[in-house]
Amino acid sequence: MNLALKKIFICFLVIIVFLGCKDSTSQALENLNNLEDSKKVLQKDLVDSRIDSSSQIKAEPSISIFLPSQNLLSNENKITILIFGSNGCGSCERLKNIISSNKNVQDKLKANYLVYYINLSEENEHKIDFHNKIDMIKTSSLKELFSVVGTPTTLFIKDKKIIFRYPGFMGTKRLISMLEVLKNTNLNIKQNDILKEILKYEKE
Image: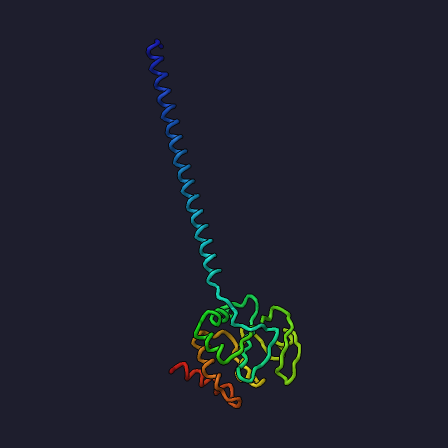
């Protein structure tokens, strides 16, 4: 092979290698760009997740409407409400949120009721006066005393007597109906009759 052909061949090889390197470099750059794009997407998802979590925390309502359950004392001018709940009870949390975030509900409660939330998952001591004397009783004994089976269970007590028992979750409309009907309830009215009055009020 003469010198001219050798030079042409060498140049041809250099061009091929250069093009190959260029393709590899382009591919590498493209991969890098894709990696950066993926990273940006992940970072955005993480930020969005944090914002969403933060919003949920901020949106959680205060439960200051509930009185300390250590002193479950009655009041002759108001009806006592005992709400029995437990940890991990979604319906209990929903009920608490309704009570603590709805102004209409809060106004009705403050006017005519004393509201207590009792967590059956915690063993505490409570001062009660529902038996014409003041006693100290533990949470587990309180559950047995009022025959609470499941959560949530809501008891309405007037003059140291249970006038209405509602097992399970109640929505805003049902809760407001109860508060309106029970604030003027006669102690001699049976539970079924009270329920009829509540349902009647809801239809009005």
